[in-house]
Amino acid sequence: MISIFKILLSIIYRSLFLGDDDWFKHSSLALNVPLIVLIILNATTRHPINLAMSFVSILLIYVLSNRLEIMIYEVILASIPATWLTITAIPFIDDLYILIHIFSRVMVVGIAILTLLFITNPIELSSILSKLGLKSISLIPALMWKVVPHLMKSAEESLLVIKLKKDQIWKGIANTMVAGLEYSEFYDEGLFLKEDIFNPIFKYSPKAIALYIILLVVNLIIYCISTYILII
View 1 (cartoon, rainbow, N blue to C red):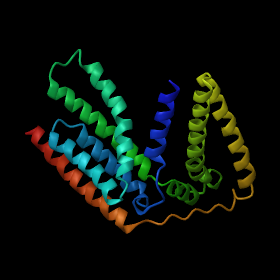
View 2: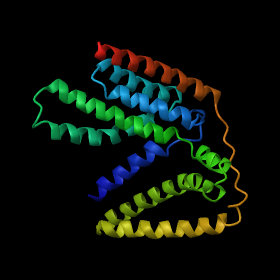
View 3: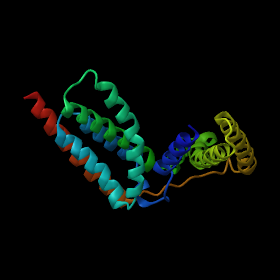
View 4: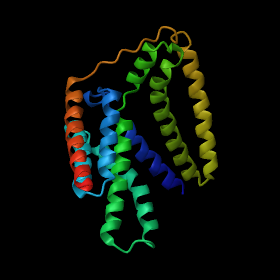
């Protein structure tokens, strides 16, 4: 059981927090969210072409950003609910094609949601909150994106220690909670004087914006065509 939790934590960490602050993370939420929503809409239609377009769109993001290994971890993570839903549907569906389609749709939707989390830049969220005059909470997105990976690594290390000691899993969780409290104290002390002067500046990447606009337009065209075909 401890090994399963450790592997799961490792996959989540690598699918969301691996890599640097690269160009593909410097688009706008106003563009990223509609793009991922369209990808999900295409993935949930009955047309295999739409599903394929959704998968290719996500694949292009990771191939062009040279982060294909991250998508592999996302595929592993998304396959968990996809496999579960497919297995639970077996008693009610005897058509293999439909079962494969269910698995594929849930898989692509899961990868799309993880992709949105991965390409969302916390500095942009902090910048938006700061411009809205919410200085007191503008530090939270950037801070959380730093704290969460630390806590996940602490949890992974705690589970490894518990496994070697052959102890109970709740002790590893308790150690992680203690580490979290220590992190919070350190950040409170270090950022107390910076709260009022924190002024995040987010720079947009023309390359990322151009890529996501192209993918948005293509997915929108495919979705509109498939919807028109269903209507007629």
